[in-house]
Length: 360
Image 1 (cartoon, helix red, strand yellow):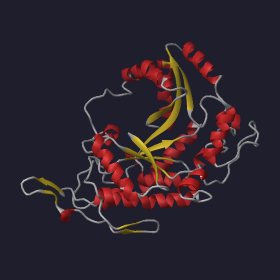
Image 2 (cartoon, one colour):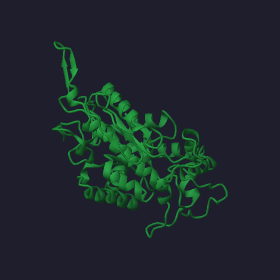
Image 3 (cartoon, rainbow, N blue to C red):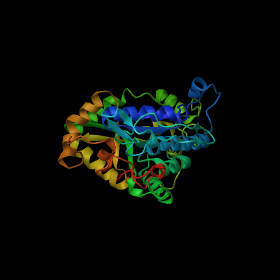
Image 4 (cartoon, rainbow, N blue to C red):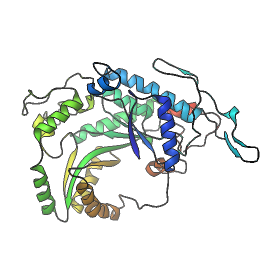
């Protein structure tokens, strides 16, 4: 279960408690998709500001926010703090539960974490954002990164850049996984899948796509001209989206019609065909870009997912590209393997641990 919560509009103390509770409840299957938010409407309604907090400042706030949660999850409770001693009526050794004493630029949190360590302690850390600030944030913190760009070579470059930055923070570059959103239309044959894609395309709405792009990018595209090459704007909303349409030598600049006027818009690659065709193309795309997996977007629900389950998953399983259900594991073990559900020692959060907490 990956849950999206914004660091701009949440309290780190409350968030830490919620995610620890959920991790206990699910047996260690919780991930946190870390976002900084991008809509001015959210700023107006949640914190009463006229405009969103500037882009790079939101990431600075997010970094301190994570430092607070790392201290709460990893450092507040020692590994053997929980006694569960029924004979003496003692649940927890209070000498092994510590206030974190955090006082920073954005947050002051003096006390201890209210929840005993959950199976993963820290939930699996998801992050999306390929602006410069976003890639730096991912390199320092993320375990699973959402990346998106309509140009495979740029997608590869962004992944390589995050891995290089991770090394600079003392992390193993292979301790970060990357996934990208794709759209899949599949059926029993290539021709049947193409017919299905053609029908879906009849319902695609260019104006609706422009409205969504305007909200996400912070730019009003209503009078821009749908066949004019898209320029890059400085914005406090999603810079990743605008970076995905910047010109490069490898590809002519995109128009609005290219980007949102058809299936496969917003940078997600579109795969159409039989199970064998789509599986071949997914494997090829993964080799070209370096992604570790795919986040499947839908055209209709549950129909898009039902088609993937019916046609594609059996083919991927036959190729060894998906796993059987197997034994229950934590989410971190499911993604990375290994015997420990905890963050790796090389992750910055490990610096806040008290005594010895066995990790991967």
